[in-house]
Amino acid sequence: MTEKSIEEINERIEDGSVRVVTADRMSEIVSELGAEEAAKEVDVVTTGTFGPMCSSGVFLNFGHADPPIKMQRVLLNDVEAYAGIAAVDAYLGATQLSEDKGLNYGGGYVIEDLVAGTPVDMKATGYVTDCYPRKDLETTITLEDLNQAIMVNPRNAYQRYAAAANSTDRTLYTYMGTLLPNYRNVNYSGAGALSPLYNDPDFETIGVGTRIFLCGARGYVVGRGTQHDPANRFGTLMVTGDLKEMDPGFLRGATFYGYGVTLFVGIGIPIPILNERMAKKTAIRDADIVTEVIDYGVSRRERPILKKVTYEELKSGMIELEGKEVPTSPLSSFFMANKVAEELKSEIEHDKFFLSPQVERLPTDTVAKPMKQTELPLVKDVMIRDVKTIGDSASIAEAAKLIMESQSTHIPVLSGDGKLAGMITAWDISTAVAQRHKELAEIMTKKVITSGLEEPLELVIRKMERSNISALPVIDDDRRVIGMVSSDEISKLIGKRKKWQWKLRI
Image 1 (cartoon, one colour):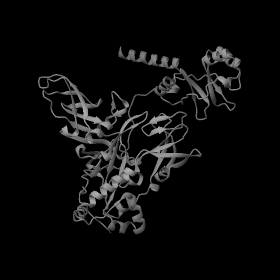
Image 2: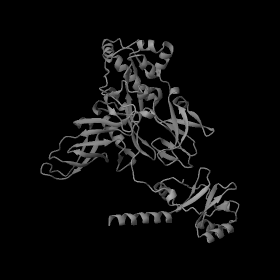
Image 3: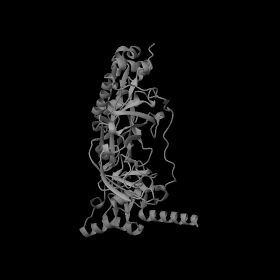
Image 4: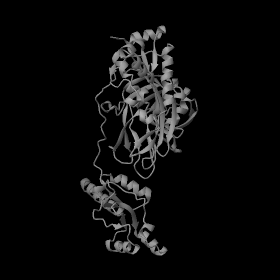
């Protein structure tokens, strides 16, 4: 039975006899030779991933000005960095937005600019003390001007990602990219079989202190990443590295249209093949990695799972969803993930990168919990349940009479099978009379903004504001009308809550 140590592998790296393969090749080798022989033949498997990793950023030390300043607020190319650390230290997050350019520029771009050697405009303000008499400053800096620029990314290298689709009739702009209406596309992320954490899912070799390839530089695993959820195969890593050593080819600022800024990060982790067990684990294939297609059209934390798929199916460019063929698109770059794995392979083979043993193993049983929060009012707390409706074959006169009798300005229109077909308002009726329309179908709104019974009221309010409407129907899963939400009822609820909170204060 083959057993190797990291020290033995490092000796082979030093004398040039090490055998290294990229993770996408290992399944072929194990299939051909078997796990035992593969463990003898291969010393290191290199992994790679290159994709949007929002939970990234850098600690920066600017050095002391003359006269000195204690920075309370610092802007880099009009992007705010958190300055509540020390006098001239700050943390710049990748997703922080520009105060001038909004969604089109942010922290990820500033980090890329710094690594590329591009000058960055800096503005800082502070409060005056005896030892820090300066109140503000403006200057231009480059990466060379900084004492330290240390990348510390709280959550990188997700083991896998859920794929995203959209059931609604409007386009959604999300951190999973642009999702077209009515399940017209599926977006996904992650490197599949090249994914670092899928090649060591039980964290036998990846742990605190593991040396990694981070954006072209030597980096290290600090510990488990935030939202580390290995129990559900959503493990993450917290990583660090020196920004001054990084390569702009493996780091890119980017914008997701309508959502915001992120940072594409290249991470490669060498997996030492210490035994037959590790050879088997690194033989993972895209066909073995299963994830879920999630409906992002549902506005709640636990979104419905539409289907389970493999990365092999996702990478094919098309999957079947709801009985039709739907195109799939990766957010990550497989080309760059392969480039990361190949670059790491080359560095190990040329005696430039040595492996480090973990000093502490990462947990394998933790689960990410949702935020603890006060209870939000839901649609069911405020909706009107006694709703007057009308059939789509009714006349304008019948609709006008119903509006007068019900004193309602919004009436849902139902199809012959009792499902929501449209909406009419008192304004629609007035317009129809003025223009001499006779059929209800001619004037009703057919693309109706709706809500569900358990939907948070806050999201419904945003829907109404965005669409400039004052009421919308509540429907069930079969598109049958079960209630109405109006701005009047929302105002009443908010008024009651404020009155109750006021009574508690006094």
